Length: 383
Image 1 (cartoon, rainbow, N blue to C red):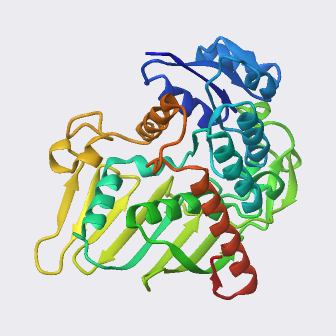
Image 2: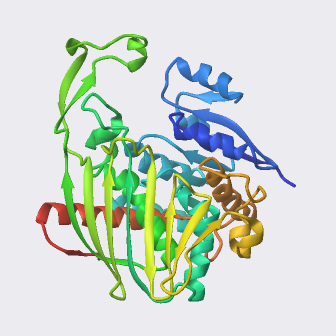
């Protein structure tokens, strides 16, 4: 079997996660990485065991032997990098968001289709096995008619006003922060699992730290030190810490989502409950190997991740026996496995199960309408 050769652009938190997942795949090799890390990129490449490294990502894209590229850079760079990768004839996996605007995202959808290149956005939470099982339960009618979907995505990594990251700056991350960053995962997940489409939104945003304290030097400079007031500068924040969004789905179903990056003790909790006329189901990303199933006229159930207890589609996403936990690092591997099946065929499948650029554009459209609702204080229909 031909060896596929892959490059990665961006070496922050998520780039090495992609690398780790790709290394689990047979007949595939990461041959180069690119980052704007200056002199430290060689050290990163050495630490990660990658032979070739580039300070200019276009030099990586220029490699004739490169089949695909994974774009893991900050948000504002995605659209330009994706476009250049597609024009270079590379299949692309991009971190979300695909672009800063839906117009940019639409252009990339069209370009990928024109070039007949396989494309994906890294909405990896779809790839927990029990999500695939829930999707099958809803599709088969086991859950009955869906009444409502409610849930939250809560984090605490920006809890203090001294917590700072580039995602706080709209010029780098986009006009929305909490909704676009983590709310997009929730919306992609519930639309994917339920098969429903969000038709209207009503949003309420809040920024609890309108002024944050940005370190004046890279945090590594302060290692082992207690920062003093003079080590910070005050920065006005124009993105949301918190949002609550009401949803109306296509057939009259209702929904509500709370997103927060200032919820103490919640490290990275995506939670939802889907209530149907037959059953309810609840899933929590911090305990992803079990799903609660609720009944009116019988005992409730905890379904554990076990190949013998689920359907064939869910079983495909399991690499370990029951009782052996699978987590966040396993989800990109499963997404990439399906993505590279199409790469080997040379073009996208007719109905790929992995999230495509079209799904990335969908989330951008939703985020823009949610922003409009938060500013206008009214229901906004999704175009």
